[in-house]
Image 1 (spheres, rainbow, N blue to C red):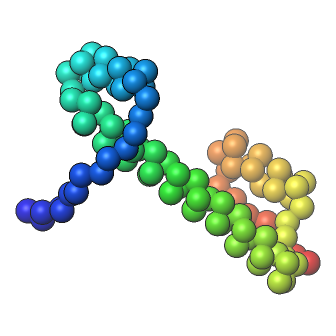
Image 2 (cartoon, rainbow, N blue to C red):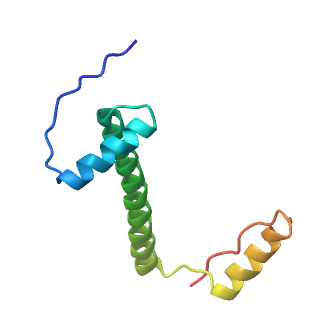
Image 3 (spheres, one colour):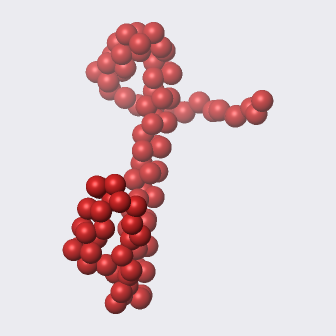
Length: 96
């Protein structure tokens, strides 16, 4: 079993949030600590995915700027319509 080193980190939260976390933790039969770790973990995972999506968009835009290859919205709509009705069709060819 791999051991993961953990270190305590202090954060400042207002009393209202602290009370809400405590109530929710009690309702879930968890500790406040567990709930906060879970919340941070889910937040980081979601934001990493969001950032990866953003970077993919930036990379696609840069690639388009470099080579001009694209498909029109009509071509994309036609292709997606075919997929929607269950036809396994290839995507349209990119062109300048």
